[in-house]
Image (tube, rainbow, N blue to C red; front, side, top):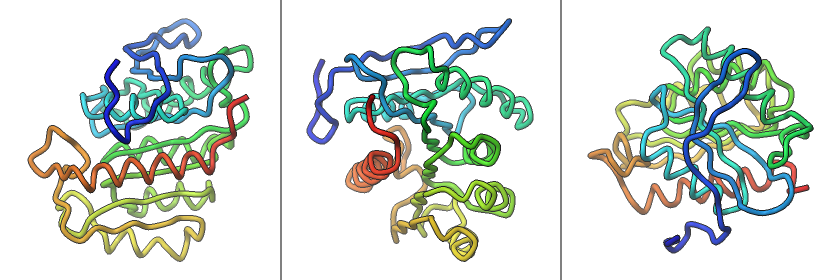
Length: 223
C-alpha cells in the first residue's frame, strides 16, 4: 500500500463495512489499524448521507495514525440519523468488540451539515469525549447541543468559505470554553475536499494534521 508523506505509517484495514444493530444491519466505511489491541475511535459525519471519496480518504489517513475511523451511512432525516448514530455508537462501544476501545470514550468529527447529527450525538451520549468540526457553522442548534456536552472541541473554518458563518461560530466561544478555534482567512469552500473547486492542499493537510493531533490528545489510548 502506498502511503504519502504525512499520511501516517500504520498498516490499516479499510473498506465498506456492515454494522449489526439488532434486527437491522447498517452500512458505513471503516478504516482501522491492522494490529492487535483496541484502538481509539472516531465517528465521522460528512456533508453527504454516504461517505464521499474525500471522507473515505480522510478515514484512511486517520487510521494510518493509529485511530480507527468509521463513517456511518445516514439519511436526510435528522431524527432518523439520531437513531442510527446511537446504534453505531453502541456497536463501537460494545466491550465484546475486538478493535475499538470506544467503551472508554470516543470522538466525533463532522464536516459541513454533518455537524447537526454529530452534535446531537455528542449531547446525548456521555461516551463522546472529543468533538471536531471542519467547515461547519456553530449555529444555535449546534451550540445548544455542545453546551450540553461540554467536552473538548476543535473548530476549523475559513472567512472565505461561503458555506460557513465564521462570525456566528465565534459568537459561541463564550458558551464553549473547551473549544479551540482555527480560522483561515482565504481558504474557499471545499478547502478540505480534494474533489472540490476550492480545494487547498496546504490548508487541507494542516486541517487533518490538527484534527489528528487533537484526537490523539483527547481520545483514550490504545488498550
